[in-house]
Image 1 (cartoon, one colour):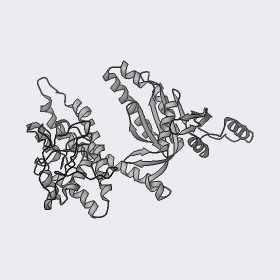
Image 2 (tube, one colour):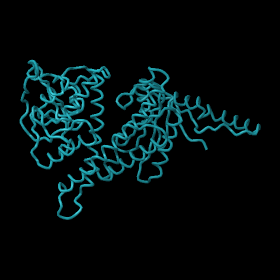
Image 3 (cartoon, one colour):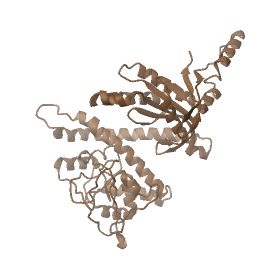
Image 4 (cartoon, one colour):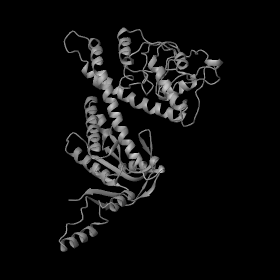
Length: 443
């Protein structure tokens, strides 16, 4: 069974600590050292061979939750489980004996190493095959048959299997839960170790080593960070549940109509060649932070960041428009930031594991690539939605006529927030000919 402690990318976590932090109730695992690879494991219950455990993210191909539905390849079978092409996996890696690493692991997991993967699966009452699929989905690397797992690992297996047995989750859904949780917390833990804890564990006094500071610091931070993580997760779960139950019908709960926007820094590739690594990192962090704050503050949802690009979604076109124009304004106020361009589309979107997919998303991306600097391009469906909701007029001629009529009758003019200007039709790769509209704010 897979050794909790490897990151979602299949690489080994620093000191074996990162992946366990911030994952209350989940299993975390050992710190690795080198060793020969390719050794088989013992036979499973009733003579069935044990399946190998995860190869990090690359193991998704072999898990039950993969798109192909391929089952794990057992030890001793004609087909071998191969490492991903990105890295080699040591199937017999043993936990390190480094005293500080062991103390930190015990502090974070709150339990001693007691079980091999086979023993943990048997104690949890779970088949080795299902245990393998769960651990692969969580992104944990293979540890062979080292005695490195704890009661927390057993409890995690028992809980997931129990949800399946009770009929609350199907087995594929339980694997998706494991995968989404593993990927999200792996990124969080890596960030906390690489950025947050690294900065705080600088020796406060000359002569002190970082290791002398790390243990007491984590001891103080761990319970607070755990409580905060659970609080934020509950808040996000409540918000997501509220959005879903307000859907018009069951079909819309999965395939929903949303506004999807991409915001892209112009000329970022040239910047990477000109700026020092530290300067580039600060620029990306500033862009991501500013974008995340603006998207959240104005009612959107940040889907993901891709260095020089952010993807966000909103339930209505007006909210997406406001976010796009404010993003451009914010970047223009920072002289260090390059120009920004935004593309937005409106339509049916499929949501999976916090991400969004479909033609609407692809169209938004293509609009971004053809948008002028410091400008927002939207598709025809988005423009029609703005007009339907009264956020933009059909034309400036109509707006002028309505304003004149309102003035004669002593009434205020219609409160249009945005203006739309049709642009030239053009072919867009993979999507045919589209007619983009230039979005701007009305005075």
